[in-house]
Length: 558
Image (tube, rainbow, N blue to C red; front, top):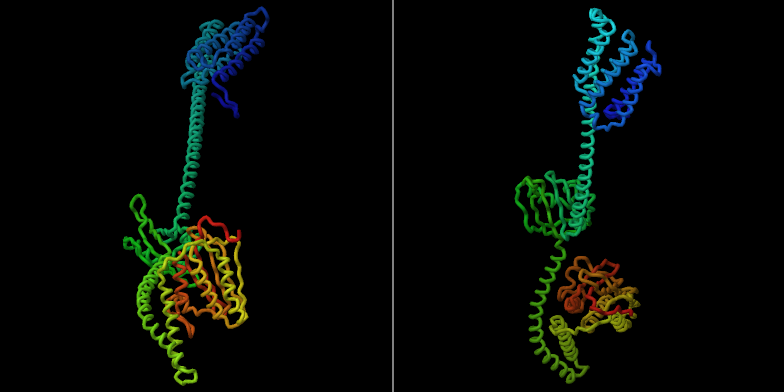
């Protein structure tokens, strides 16, 4: 193919264009030859045949132009026609012979390096015959004749060389274009594969992120330089640090994470994993959190160490449950002992109280000994009250399990304590949410909780104020729960006493058994609930109770 400024010509088109050029030159030179181009002369007939023949060749299919023998036939016909026209036009003495050069050049198009030499040989023979016919054998001794013959071969050689160069360049270009197409296809395939891999990586990254977000344990991964590469959401929740702040930095840059950095450093240096270790970390506001932690080395597929992993859990709730279990075990032992002691004390105490009351009837009020008898009687009854509290604390009787309306419970407590609160100018306020669920339990024992809490709140307030009882619905870990809050504006509880107020016999009052809050906690635990307290000195105290909601019950406001 031949390409000219973006126009690509196949072999047939190239040959036909040059042939038409030769035809036109032959006709033109025949017209201006000594014989001219008259209608009756042979040149006219030859030119017409040449023109018609070239028109016919234009309709020959492309595939024939790719065949060497067909192209050589065309070239030979051109040389014969040119020689015939030169002969009949008597143009051997003119420049008519120059058309031979064009024919030889045309024969080199698309051929090998020696492709036009056969045409040059035929041309030389025909040209020599024409000269011989015109001038005889004497012309062969002329230098002009022998100068023209070599030029036929020079043109054949240079045109063939040019044709080969053009063909080589064309082949290189075709190979380059083919390579470009192949490369383009490979680029498209590579791009498609890259997009697929990218989508796959994106999917697996999202999948990995979802796993890390869903894991209930904290996960931290560091590389060999102890730079954080993974810091999941749960780790951020435990340490109160956003993952984006920690990623790409060392654990030592953050004070709460330094204990973990030391353990991970030790794991990478020694190669020994840590299993179920417990450490204490300090987070925001110097709050201490116990962590259950395990570490392991991070290996690649080549078994080379790439870093270390730390997996940990907040043990605060577990430790709290352990403390509650220990506390319950102590209370159980204490309860058994208290029950036995209470029964053993109550028997002689009844005798003492009975005889003391009998003496009261025998001794006149004016008798100086009467006050001692009264003291014995009062103390005996005080001991009896203490024994009753102890027996109530160790109460083992199965409580009732009925639906209890907390709003109605709050109303009964407020009605029972209004007069006592009014004497100190204290207002009892109820704030009941309409969606507060009912709870299953013993209404009498639940009411005792509220009575004791309200009574303690009244005792803690030495100035006018309000005691608020709130009820509402909350969502717990295992489903909906009912929340009861008793909030006062009293003197508050010292921080050092907050951990001990629920222990038996602990009290700050001049009178009392110290079993009130212990009994409250025991009743709450019987109802599978939880009680917590918050207090500030001179600002007040808030007791919060959480009880499981009764299943399939309507809200209390309905």
